[in-house]
Length: 441
Ligand code: SF4
Ligand code: SF4
Image (cartoon, rainbow, N blue to C red; front, side, top):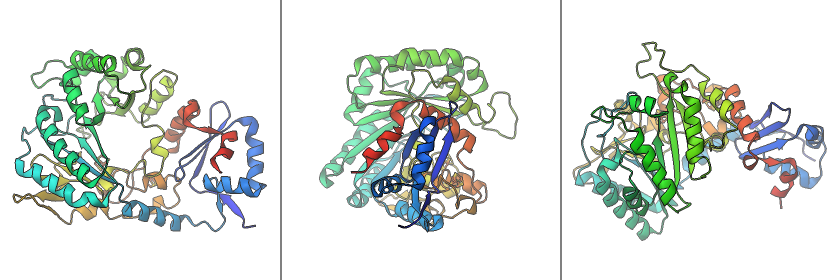
């Protein structure tokens, strides 16, 4: 029988109570082996029946001894660049905003999409959609709800194309939540916007400082009220609302109360998830007490992991392609309000991000800048990396460029271990040793 070895994409972590978590970023395996089972598991890796062998290979625990990671990495890249599943559009109907968030990198120009740009997007989708399995549209801005009628109008046109080509349509929105009243939510829901990302930067005392209205007025109470009304009055189980927090040191000082609020208001509703990010210093050349030190996020996750709140992206990041940014995905396009086509939603002023234009005649043109985003440039550091199937070295293509083609990894193994500790404590996020055998028919 051909000899086997452990998969190079398999990662082992010993949890705080001595159990073991195994994750494979190619097969999306999350396996927990209790400490009492570890000996038996290790023995099984050496001695197994034909059927056990199949299960161990299918789950990416063992691979043939001649498994060559460089060859396999190339196959993964090929699969990623050739797949045509989702046509992904990020549409900025306006770059104007009713807020003036302290850390915002956009210039809030209140331009709105012209008729030519809207028709140009529709023509772009008409041409491309037949090659894909479905269309996913993300509304972004500026604040997209300033242009509700335009969102509805573009949605109708794109959904009618999806109907024509018999392709499913999905939609999500990043909004500051201020205008998301119950009535507006109903309209957006009928536009099939089912997933939202809304930011609450701590409690009113911090949020209103970081995310004031354009006239300086606070926005916390209105947003929280909008969220509570959706929670209480919306019956659909198909909605997903991610409450984001951009963490800074002032927010950390009230974080216990903030987490208590999240748990009390949204903790028992699986439609509401939590996303925490550490806020970037917009002027990194100026040191500031305001911005948190590295590792803050992991410390918070550890501290609050027993709270009844759902952390949204924890498992995704270990899955195949789960860490790849849409900026590096050849099937993803950002349409800006002035008709510019881009890849990244952060480097809006960077010339390399200008990959094309919707023209006056409502056709579109893509230029050579797209190569920067979608031609893979393999970094030696990635060759032996167990996370290659999830990250592929393009976790942030913009950063790669800034780092002169070195790579900034999305977290260290210590960071990953904290996420795996979280997964190990959440029964619905992993399978047990006994479940492994159910995966093979
Ligand atoms: S900054 Fe990096 S991770 Fe963010 S959208 Fe741009 S390319 Fe993607
Ligand atoms: S960038 Fe880092 S985490 Fe990503 S594949 Fe390369 S070495 Fe691995």
